[in-house]
Image 1 (cartoon, rainbow, N blue to C red):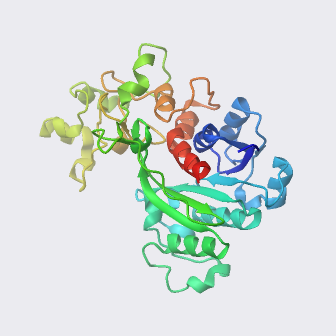
Image 2 (image 1 turned 90 degrees about the vertical axis):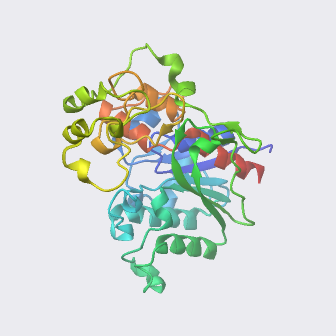
Length: 355
């Protein structure tokens, strides 16, 4: 390819997906991001112009003006619309939630910019998400609002109306060289024939001509002993965490200790695997969340009495060590935890370049 491949980034965050896309060979020409500190992170580390606004207020004309691109000459649009409305951990309000409408804004931008390709990233919950309510312009889907998967059906149908062929799958980032078991839906669109989903390069045991998963040790071992920034563990869990070894969680405590440590949560149904959880150096990290000290999703260091630090978070999500995150520590955890692992973005973008 003897010309520059150009891309537009929506819902850019701290640029995890974008860095993966750029490492594959694309050049991001504009980022749209409304979070103040994520926008500052982009400015601190790059010269890419940032439109710091709610996507609902951003016109395609503004995107073209700021990016200095022309409609019809955009190779790729990338983005992961805010996904809490579809998260299986939340109430799954679908498009009745304002954040859910961000996915409709993604669709709008694609319809107006008409890029050759797009990458849409989202949580597993998108596969089963229900519309619940409909914007007026989508009345043809009336009657499907309560159907499981109706959001995905609307998206695919509308993209196909625009001329895009669609492929999508739930991918585990660990299968693409990321030291993290993080499942995300990746959708690839093309104004033409269908782009195949990228084949895994890694697997748990290195079977079928793949490499073995990258472990937490591989990712963070060389920065152990260096200065770390982190939010301390909650004081009430410390006596119990002292009793747990690498890779253990609340199930390794005595029944008496587990009841004391977890309170009412002890009697909840479900696996509760994130409670009082120490990570293991010898496997990929679990999905990084926006705070490593939350009771149900604790991410405690394998051997030290502290959660994973922001430096370790950044390594797991594959940000370069030179990447500077702006804001308070709570915002930094959130920026990194919300990011798409760079390796997953790279795998998707390399597949498009190969295509």
